[in-house]
Length: 461
Image (tube, rainbow, N blue to C red):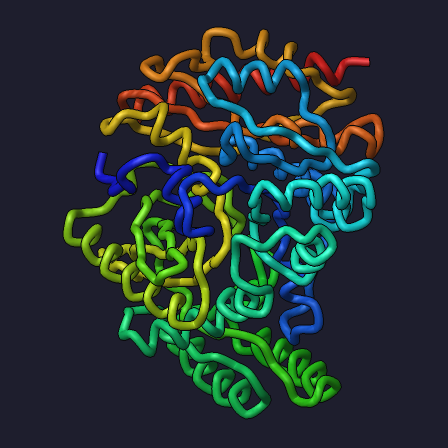
């Protein structure tokens, strides 16, 4: 397998990077959707909020169970299914202590729930004497508020630093500064820059080259528009300019040439408090309409491309450290149909899905393992207990590291929307691993088919 991994225990290395000590206890928060807080008050593209999707994404907080050790605590929106906890224990994972919020609101992140729970705040405050630090998925003003209320220091930079380095404008300017190849494009921070970008984009469209507009703080397919004709570009120009004039002329966009893509890539690096940069892993990213769906390992890269990625990671990490950032960083990259590698499309300076898979990857998957991390959609009419799911997947679940099969790394998202009505959607997150791509594909098909049958069975009145 052509991935390049960290050496030593992944949890100890992460802990050292975040806190300076390998044995420091952590309190983990899986506050996915932290980008929504970074985007507040910013002048981007018109956003669309999908409440049902948010309800499911907020239960991705359970992913943090796989990133925590036995001396850590994980704060969750609700108690996990006991059968699921026994399943994780059976994988050989020493599980953390679990704290749950008193009244979890489906539309709120776990951090927002925690801030509103005085009893939980007091319990977290009781951990101050242990030397524990708070490690969120990403840091916004909400996580800073929780740190302030509990007295727990953040094992992360300030919200202001995190927000700044997560802007797509920051990513483009960094790539220009350190000389990394990136798609042709421009940043648009005011009306003048917007007008210049629109003129340039019009020339691209006239030459048959599509254009993409990206919200500086958009995420997972939200706040991104691909434009293929000048009429649509003119409409967007008028809309964005009108909004900007109401907002002191502020614009917060990136405009780029839309590249003919062969593979989406995602790689992870870790910047420690001293500024040292550690390269963790690179995977092929599976996306649909810009929305992350999963990963394939190993990534389809040549050795020179691997070296190019590692060199880019080092340059990105050094620049982030200079700007006060430390912690996990995910970088999106891509290869084009003509074989070019673009090692930076955007920076996600926070935990990523890869982060939550690292412990599994390093303890369950051998150096030649082929793996597919993905989400399986479900359609249900009642909550599905983990015991039923486990029975349904009997024979395809991996029960030891040397056996091909599926490892489930989040179950809460299956039933997260069960209160929304008689018919609801869910997601099962897992990693299929085997000795070959063909074997992985066969296992993936089998899991998909069984879950389709599960949906049909559960959906019966």
